Image (tube, rainbow, N blue to C red; front, top):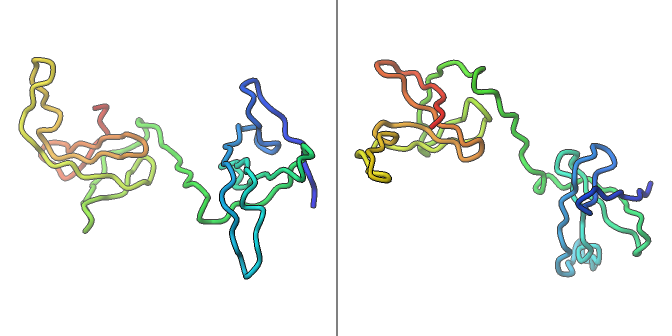
Length: 156
């Protein structure tokens, strides 16, 4: 078991000794019982590195930290976002839940049905007059190419 002394950056936040990214701090919670034993480690704050998938916990207020692997349920999804120029026109189809996979980041996109023309700041807004898909993760919008079954990335 190796212990590490964490360094702070200019913003006074701890940084990961492996990748150098700032660590996310999660305050400790309540005492938990695991396998019939009291788990006092649950009350201690953790410093989490989402990119490495580990967290650091201080040992006895010594200033030194022990490293642990993050449980699978706490790991954040890492999405690789593709540049907009690298996305060819694609056929997108709604699945049973009304969503489909985003060609840019892989997250689930919402289907937005066409609506009437709206007046925004005294001007007509035609952006929602045709069906399109919108991704909540990468904020991409895919609009249908007229006369085809293909969808293209759109800046609005």
